[in-house]
Amino acid sequence: MCILVVGSVAYDTVETVHERRERQLGGSASFFSLAAALYAPVRAVGVVGDDFRQEDLDLLAAHGVDIAGIERRSGSTFHWSGRYHDDMIERDTLATELGVFADFHPQLPAGWEGSPYVLLANIHPDLQFDVLEAVADPKLVVLDTMNLWIKTTRASLERVLRRVDVLLVNDSEARLLSGMTGLAAAADAIMAMGPKRVVIKKGEHGALFFGPEGVLAVPAVLLSEVVDPTGAGDSFAGGFLGHLARVAAHRDDGDAEFREAMIQGTAVASHCPEDFSVAPIADLTSEDVAQRVAWLRAMMTP
Ligand code: AMP
Image (cartoon, rainbow, N blue to C red):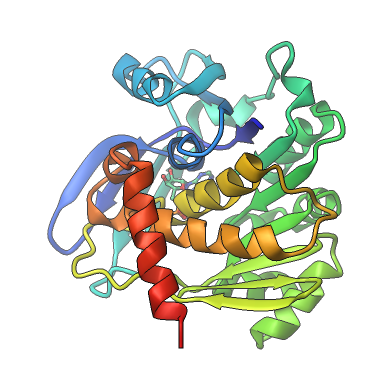
């Protein structure tokens, strides 16, 4: 079943201790779409400027992503720039230039209102809300966000959270959103805001799932080299919701498929840091994912 995603389609400038790459394809919707397209049909909603390279749109389309919802407007494409610390985990945002996102009002192409799975990727929560308003009775809504929106647009975020089935956040975002230090208490507080299930990502320490039937901890794949972790969270979301859409799991089903989705998300995300930009996710095959899933299952078996 198909997945509707709204998020940023961006150019990223990324600095690591080794290298600097300018204006390469990025954005939460780009990483998510390429990852989720391995599992299910994806419909992308977003906006790019007149500087956006046709080859980047072609790349998404070549992977089966329906780009009819990506508008091209006069102005600059959203640009994010960040610098990673030596640990290749922590990063500082150097610039966030909204460009054409500043006055974007998402419009769904005809027929997309019935999309059963919805991923509200990292973007201003009012845009996430607008898209949700336009979709009729989705089976499952998953939301990703970041510290910027928790700090600057909390009321808008809380409004959309009330209508979401699953929230994906990292550990510091979970603490910031909930005001709790312990992650179990943070997850409980977040579930009281609306989502029935919460995923807390902990980078190289894996990810935690909290649902009605309990908790699951999934370790991260141990990588020998990290080139650029940008987009790993969005790629996780792609594997996670991709799996749920492929098996058509519903918000009222038990946790079993959500727990499997944690493993799929972890396996997909583990490829993202292997190279810059979307290259590792664009090159990914289902066989590559299956190998990492097997590796993870073996590591999780006592
Ligand atoms: P991740 O590494 O999974 O957290 O995602 C990084 C991606 O998020 C980059 O490709 C950025 O273009 C995008 N991004 C960063 N900040 C924002 C923002 N404020 N709104 C939307 N997308 C953003």
